[in-house]
Length: 344
Image (cartoon, rainbow, N blue to C red; front, side, top):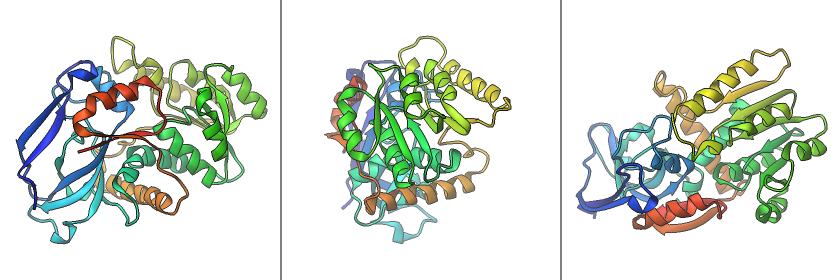
């Protein structure tokens, strides 16, 4: 039986994590034409929610709103125009916002089926993180066997998937992380570099004297300049965030615009290197059907890799949805490795 009420977590404004509002007893959403009602089994905390809490995510909606960049759940009901065979299937969705709820009505065309043998929490770790990692590695950098790549934040949500996918592709991986994560990275086959204690550019040059073939940088700021300088001829830099500016004040657009400007200038230089600023939503506004097709195909590849053991789900902790404030505080502490999963 489908519940008659649902719960959601609301971000009311620029508040501390404890300012998140849990609303219960709300009337259950009714799926409109082309939609499906999903009973959420797992959603997650990503860097995007941390930025949204500060009002610093590039294109976040106005307050108040429900955060939640992605989710995994089971289809409970469908609206007109959607085949009834979708009911009962476990699916995943990239939402950007709205995922921190027990039930969500979504366009059926945006849902990606989760294969049998992959649990909800496991799949959740691989939605936005796995999709981002897969597309950066295979669509942007096009990493091949025998190449050397540098992954910043190799123990993080995206980084931990990136290093596994890169290793599975036959690449040599150098990963930056704090010293307490080095043993775990070595166990995977990654050569760790301490971003706090080492001179990162100097250490990477020792490990790869001729430069690296790809760098994946979520830090921004000074790091992005160093990353560009570490590339071998023909190498690719993929920037996908500006974590260094998380606590900055002022314009939320400026860090991204600055990154875009650098990328544009670097690509004009005649040195055979390439730079990209990666946005998982790129192309959605102009070509929604092709965007959905690409998302479905790539995320299915990630789920298959997860099911076959080529990558492993790194779950830091699972917490009830009602403890979203605690989850946010933990995510921002930088003390955990892997994905923090919220379970309604």
